[in-house]
Length: 414
Image 1 (cartoon, one colour):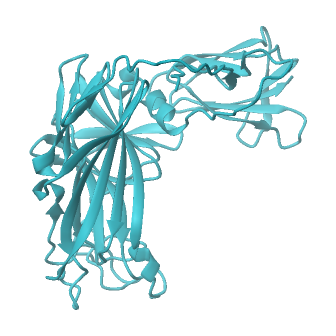
Image 2 (cartoon, rainbow, N blue to C red):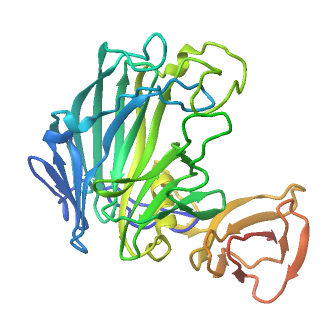
Image 3 (cartoon, rainbow, N blue to C red):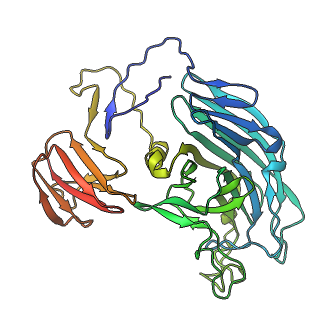
């Protein structure tokens, strides 16, 4: 294996594979830990394999990460609703086993395995959880790459229970009253306890979760922790023993499209149709990543680091041939944080190329867009691609000043 540490922006890089011995530089492992140049990940096997992450750059320690928490859910596919007498089960009470299942010159992959015992379903009157228990086998994989300051996680659960909500908890080690989350085209600041944690009119229990598009970050300005989730969009930020906690919902297992007896919502939200597959039976896999950092999310470049996790390079194998492309090539490069590149596509009329950028931060972004060749003409445009202003000057490197929280669309004639 080889480690590709940097690929050209919107481009490619060619490599030739040569069979020779390789060293696992910067990587090490032991009976209950793995580590790279930046992070050491230890596993507490007496507490369900919870993670203790040491940031070797700063000496900061993050304890009790990736604990699973299982509570009742007698809601429907629209809304979560706890039973009146809930019972929450934590993986901290489980004894876990540990194994480094993959080790090589560029990455380590460790697995902890344990089994939770959780209520089988809701009680017949749906006011509590069943006294009957079933096993919930869990495998938690932690992956470290050489040269990358994050911990990637895979959670594999064989779901044998019904009427429950499974979540994963990340104590941040700091105690603050607000947090930041990635949403569409912006990073939003939210209070941990807010008007969103409200009692709907006619309801008996509050809604405490928020939506996110990609990640959630908690920081006290000195240190912080970001959790990135692939395809998981519901979270809560709450106070805990280990400081402010980020809690992601892994799955909600319910049996009805809509019900009228929820604590968190009065009446129906749709037709009362039984949906047994919404109990999510069988093996389910979830992917997240932990990014410890100093400073704020903006200072730490969390948005870019999160995208590097979810949008990874694609490898294409080819036999040697006499092609006319260079070994390394880039169509365009966007310089100047915190603005991000979002879209590159053919225009609706098919005659030009549309490039879309956005600034997700509260600060103005000074951006340079370097093209693979100078554009013949360029325009600022609206989202519907109507041209607003023609740009002049150097159309090989286009310079833009993007205000906070603004989407910038360019139309290019190449």
